[in-house]
Length: 347
Image (cartoon, rainbow, N blue to C red; front, side, top):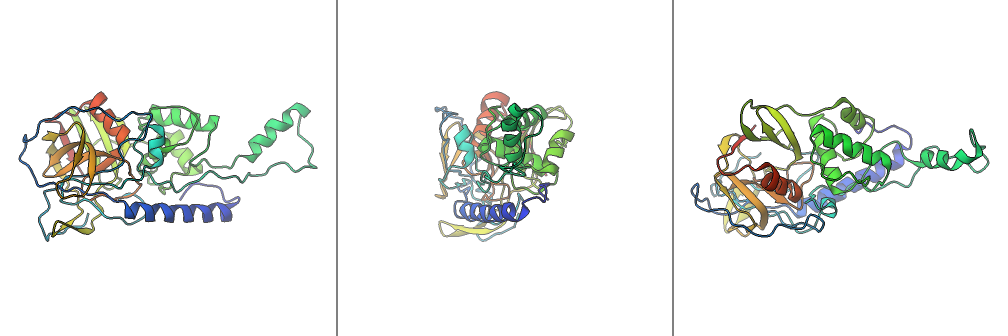
């Protein structure tokens, strides 16, 4: 459940449902695809190229390489509510060209923009109501009363800044504490809701606030070394060091549906198992199956890679690759590392 109070629920739920359906429909039409033919490990050295400016929209398309899928084969493969085309065995997955709210924050936010700021206040003081306390406090009291009991996309306030700092302290991917609920914050809220087993709508109600206050974070499955863990069930990517989760990133993997590319049929499936980064491309990479582009991919099996995307919703939506925001992918490359040979554990 949202953890949102019941006051004003009719209007709020109605707006949220319509917003969510719209975002789902948009995401379903912009799914990416992994689509290069599989290349043997070590076949391509990383090439350098300028990275997108964090303050400008990051590359919008996701492409995932998934040459591991065989024509005609199909194994269905999570993130929150809905359908979309996936990236299964094709190597490059492209995720549409519409920037998500994340891009506005310098982060490739493929997150769904299904939550709009609410104008409706909860219990605003009436014109004939007398202020409580000193006359000078009336303005501040009314302002507080006009705020809804929940926080959603678009709000700018001190309480958003407090939430951003809390998420950052817990290890969720937040780079800026700026009091503005934009795409990057939404990605972090999606990740928190996934970790807590909550409804993934990006709206911060009572349950989501409690999860943040209680310090809900996922646990690592590995105990030694530097490992990139991918939790398919909860749709999360975890940067783990010696059993400690140092960063929690919202992700979107294969949605299990079939798709056609260059006359062959593939299934959008992300395989589970223990792998290692065997190829990385330090630039925008185009799919040989003409499924689109992916930002700075790190391939770990066949044509399946972790890569940056402008579309990272709260549910599985790729053709098999694992999408994260462009900003998160830049962090993996430039700050955390994960060079060739880094273990990748998918469960």
